[in-house]
Image (cartoon, rainbow, N blue to C red; front, side, top):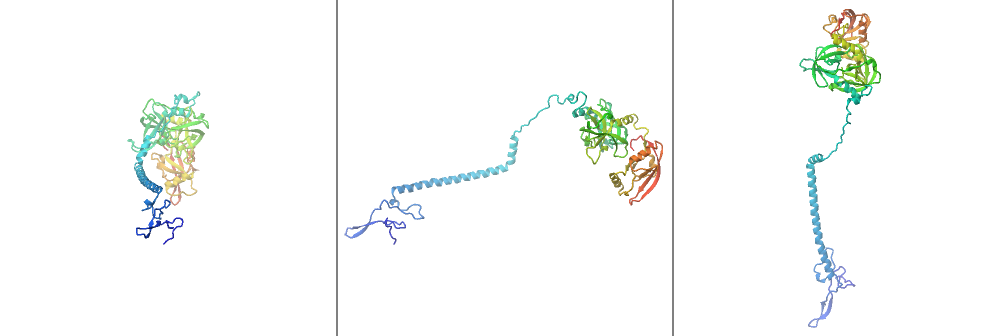
Length: 464
């Protein structure tokens, strides 16, 4: 039995309820205990596990009942709100996942639609009226700008294509040419053409013509061809002796098949003595320029700012190891050859030996010779290598063979093409017999020398 709380006799310390009793007598007069009403200040006590009192409704005051009723009323909306919030959260998450998946699946189409709808503003303007008028590109002294010089000469430049067969099935190479007459005479480089080939000319107006060779001279690398045409625009030929170092120039031609290309630069030097890389050419007087000259430019024009052709460009004269070095045969040097080729088809009085030569003056040339021979030359050996012998030459009848070397002409040692040609031209002419010492080298490096005598024939072929 637990002890009662002294301050509240109706409540045990743990909160149990003990009703109050009073002594009274029953009908027989016997004294009995009778429970009396609970005082208003008595309140039910809750155990830890109880949410609300059970079985004590009649014992609570009106305020207590109201409090309990409010708790009941608040609990239902809270539960409903939680449920509603959970439903809304579930719906939002589901819609988000659906949207993300849909965007991923249709992202490409969406991007395309966005790009299609994107508005891009482009700003465009035209040159001022008359800006392309050629009169704006020349001053009162007749000097053109680069635009003016290009326009002045471009219609006088042609493309030249060389084929080995009449049906033009086998392409050999291409180059450029300069129109020098209204009726179709065109000057170019000899190496652009092939003596027994077939040639096609295309003008800046895209007209195509078959061309025939009028004359070609491999020694100077100059040739003239002719097409059947009228009303062509001939180039204006200038005086290359008036050219000065530093003056502005343009080169016009067809490098790498890129039709009618214009490059600009300056005159780097004048009066350069240059020999063609094929070692069968004369030493020609050339204009050096930094205007870019590439294969395909050969036979094209070097033009000053007065629209005058002052040189014939040649890729055979460019350096293969250095940039910014281009050469053009000066027009004053070329003009007498052009006129004689038109008049006679060849250069009169010039002798021809009938051999193609490479000398041993540089390491690169020695390497080229060794590649052809298939073995190395003796270290200290010098001479002029014979790469080809013409069938219609007198030297063909001697014991000279392809792969052998000239070492002496009439007892004078020759190690370069210049020494070889100058020695012959200073002593002999057409019809003369020339004594020479030659050498044969085997793959073991053994050298055997022998002597020949060959005749000089007149050069009408223009080859070598």
